[in-house]
Length: 156
Image (cartoon, rainbow, N blue to C red):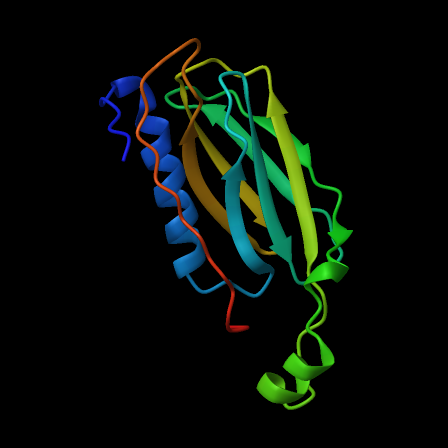
């Protein structure tokens, strides 16, 4: 076991993990199949993804915490056909009524500042989801990491 020292510069890992875990615990709303979550954190960029029920663009707004200037992005949904349930899953778990493939939304935000907290809101249809993230520190910094695996052994 590798023991890494704690550093305030690594708080974003805790925020990342909390966001990933809590967003998957919540039950998705009408327009979201899976609530927004973050991936690929870097000092100057981060990716926000979510899945929707319908093929309609979503709106991502983000801003530096404590500031009022917001930047907006519209998503370009893509059908996530790889997430379609198999015939066996459809008949075993859904009695032939499995949901259709969701639509994946992916936005890479760039030109951010290192070790900075940002807030964001994703609007999909009439539903909104808000959260925050912290960019990675610039340079070498100690970090604690947690590995979280979800084997998706059940479809719900």
